[in-house]
Length: 148
Image 1 (cartoon, helix red, strand yellow):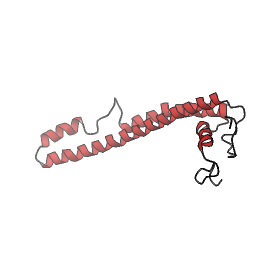
Image 2: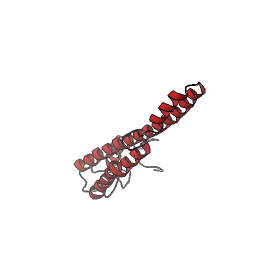
Image 3: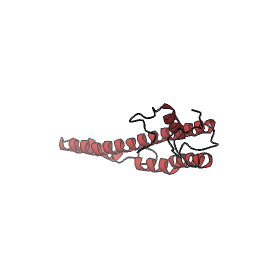
Image 4: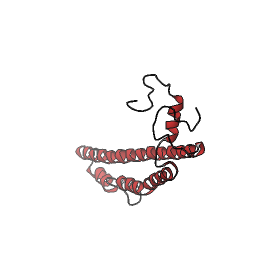
């Protein structure tokens, strides 16, 4: 099967006459980069959640210090650390918002623009072509599309 042959799938995502293998590969690389950004964003949200939980746990630890009679130490830690910015002027929700509103949104927009300009907006062309090459036609679990 040639790279332009879509096989028996009839899946319009792969049926793009005139889209070269080099373009599909380049769009695949761009998509892979976006996936890495999505994973990084997930880790940023995890950082946000863990940092928030740590601040709650710190408050609980300070209460325990007070109950154990260490009011002065608890007060000094509370004043300096509880609710403190994790970065200059920012709590983690502000870091997440800035990332989302800036880098993440812009990255997604450029990836979408590239797909719209080069592949009629279709996603995952590289993976779709790979699936078409690697699946075993006629075998259960290897259908080209759902319901095929």
